[in-house]
Length: 262
Ligand SMILES: [Zn+2]
Image (tube, rainbow, N blue to C red; front, top):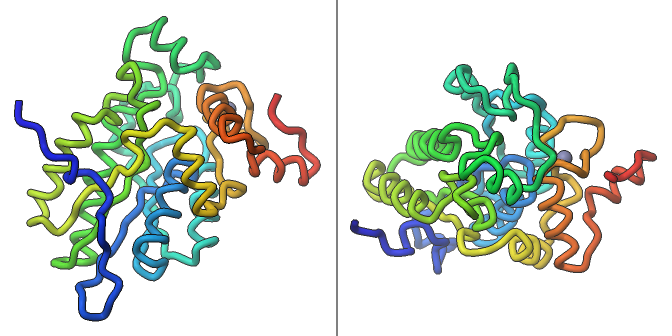
């Protein structure tokens, strides 16, 4: 099997900011969580806020709290945000994250779920990254036509561990990065800057960049505050703990007079 060089989905080493260069646009898939928010912070640092667009996808989630968080993050950086509704594509899925699903959201860790159920876990949304990246590449080509655009995705190696999320794996990112480049005449390239990082390393980078983590939402449940028990709440807490800092979003809930997650 041929494999693409890492450059097919790595961040650019140089980015055109000068007037003598073609503008290098950045389009960031933003879910309102900490991974994509770190990507957004990185894109703003590398491209300048004026060249960054945030794209958020409603795919039929049980709640819209994370999309509200994505909107708040875009406002923080004063960047344009676009939201697509791709929920009709997934209306036949019984994924636990989706409206109408008969499955409840597991409070086991990802590792426990993989050990119990095999590689495909209940919160795997069918080909979600493929769907979102395809929409994002089409949007980039529509907006910028022949100008270069870097498409940022916050996938990291913890999501791909045990093949829990197959569409976060390195082979997936390599090949869809190649497909996006070919299918856009080379104008759009995929950057997955954290593909080789764990979540703790993502948070470390975001803290360096001053990412607005206080505005983010990760919990799969859509309550008034994070549940503290679902797999993504657990991963998030571990990532901040590994960096020796308190999760600023939790401080926000506390300041609102709400209890933090258990
Ligand atoms: Zn949770």
